[in-house]
Structure formats: C-alpha cells, structure tokens
Image (cartoon, rainbow over all chains, first blue to last red):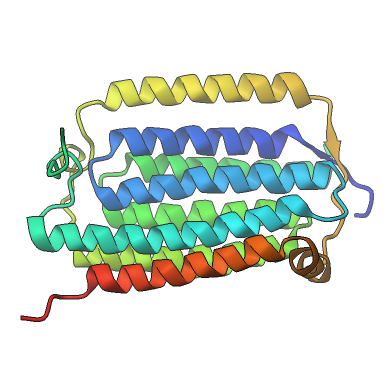
Length: 106
Length: 163
C-alpha cells in the first residue's frame, strides 16, 4: 500500500459536513448536554482538517497532528467543566433547557 | 480511486449519517450512541491517513472517556423525550445557517483542493513525542496546567455544599 494516494478533498469535505452539522446542533438544541455533544462534533471537524493538512504538507515535524492532540486535550477539559456546570444548574433549577436558564440574561 | 479513497469515503458517509442522527434524534441516549459512531469513524479516518497515534488517542479519550462522561450527565439530569423537549423554535433558521456554512465550506474546499493528493506517510509515535518535547514544550506545560485547573474547577463546581 506504500505510494497509494488519497484525494485531499475527501477528509476536507467530511470535516466541512461535520462542522456544519455541529453548528446546526448548537443552534437548534435546547438540552445543554446535546449542545456539548454538537460542540464535540465541531472540534472533531477541526482535528480532521489538521491531520489531513499535516499529511498533505509532508510536515516532518508533524505539527498538525501535535496540534490535534492539544485540541483533544482542551476538548476534554472543556467537557469536564461544561458537565460540572450542567449538573450544578440542574441541581439548582431542575432543568438544563438552555432557554429556561436566563439568570444572566440582560 | 485507490483503496484508501474508497475506505475513506465509506468511513465519511457512515460518520456523516451518524452526525445527522445525533442532531435530529428525539432520544438523548441515541444521540450519545450516534456520537460514539461518529467519533469512531473520525478515528478510522485518522488511521487511513496513517496518523495512528492520533487515531488511538481519539478512541481512548473521546470514545472511552468523554462519551462516558456525557452518558453519566445524561443519567444524572432529567432527559425528556420528544422533539419539542429537545429542540427550540429556531430549528428552520438554524438549518439555514448550517446549510449556508456547509455550502460555503464545501465550495471553497472543492474549488481550492480538487486536484490535490495526499501520499500518507506513516507517522510514528516517536516522531510525535520528539516534536512535543523538542518544539512544543511550552504548550505542553500550559495544557497540563489547564487540565489541572479544569480538574480542580470541576470538583469545586460539582461538590455539594456542606450544610
């Protein structure tokens, strides 16, 4: 299989579709946990782009893949904090519907 | 079409269908299971692109840890079932925005890169490790501080107040 080529557009189109789907989920969902899942979709789209371009540019330092690892780490931290906040809101308000949580609404 | 092209296309189609199901399903547990499928397919894309370490990290951290965390919080909060309980009223507008973003992205990507080919070169874990510890030491340390802060913050937020 050495020397076989891949069209660059396939991973890029996949990433674009994942990102747009994530945007729809963030905008259309009410449930806070589902919004967090959609954010994960968007972060994964970014990672697919990073890895695809890292391979396309034949980067000897594999910077794209290292940055994908950093993005995964930051996503893990974000989910941890986000779910702690969600559970705290549920404990106080008995709901995690984002349009009912309006304490900070101006 | 090489074998890699075909397998990438299959992985991308399954991942896309699962992602659509994730944002349209009326059952939150089904959404989490669709997320597992999408994340696994993204890991498969990394494997076909010969980025094995990122693929395994994807499987371990996302499918192994983050989805379990999401499922736990689904179980700990009340999860109503039904479209009106899970979606808000701006569904059409959200679909319009998402379709516009998708159209723009896909046009730009196919217009710019339609002739480009990747020759996947096997990336060893050793390469990634030496890059992190030779060129990205500072971001690595910053990320470890960030993880520590997130850990302490999550514990402090979710802890029950002592009476």
